Each structure stands twice: as C-alpha cells, then as structure tokens.
Length: 166
Image 1 (tube, rainbow, N blue to C red):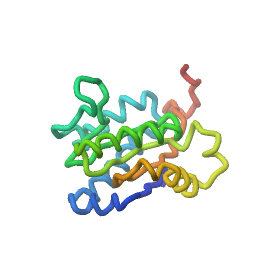
Image 2: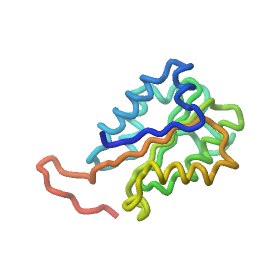
Image 3: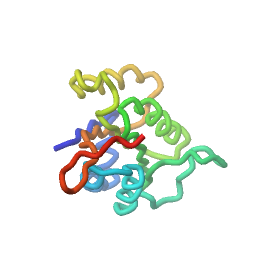
Image 4: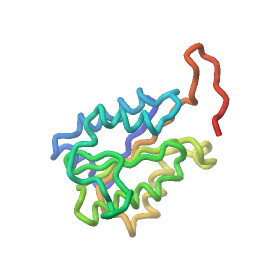
C-alpha cells in the first residue's frame, strides 16, 4: 500500500454515520491508482474525484464571492489536497476548518504527499503527523482524516525516467 490514512477527532465515525466509509476507501485507492507515476497530477486528481462523485453538492465556495473552493465535496465531507509537498498540511487543514466552523461541512479529508519536505525522509510519518496535529490542537476542532501518499515520480510507459518539468 502506498498511502496511509490517519483519522483524527473520530472522523471515521462521521464517515460511518454518513454511510461513506467504503466510499472514502474507494476514493483514496482510486486517487492512488490515477496519480501514481503520472504527469499533470492536479488535472488527474480533479478527474478522479469527479469520477467518484466528489463534485456533487451545494457547498463549493468557502468564502462567498471568492475563488476559494473545496477540491471535492460529497454528503457533508470536503476534500482538500496538496500533492506536491507535505508542507501543505497547515493551509489544507485551515481551509477545511474554515468550512467546518461555518457549518458547511461535517468532516474533512486532506490528501498530502510524503515528498517535498526534508523532514519526511528521515521521520516515521505516524509520529510526524501526530506531532503536527498536536501542535495545531488549539485551532482545530473538526473531524478530519489525513491521507499521506507516497507517489512515484512520473514515468514514460517504456520505463524511462522523465526529466523534471519546471
């Protein structure tokens, strides 16, 4: 398995109450299968979430009149993602927390990459994520699940590594 799903503040119970536990698992797996070793991950992520029905619902905009929106929304659960770096954790959690505080969502899912941060290479991810969540305890009150992906670098089908696109 190339991802780890961590639940905080009983997010898994919210998913069960909404009969979404298997949907969340299928979505996390589908995102992994869609993005692993691929280029243009942002476009593919949106397509994968759309295929799994995560664009259905009345709540999109976090701040009225602005372009800030949840990446995906379904049955009171919002998804945010930053698959370039683990360091998106703060921004992603704050976006979800804002929606939770405004009563727009009941729980959130944050998808992150284990790449892009020096600390991720030398640290047990479970210890790191629990430490980071503990540090944000005073401002986080929502049920949230964090999915950490270990995605492979993009590759060409013939197996040759591709150059980094800047």
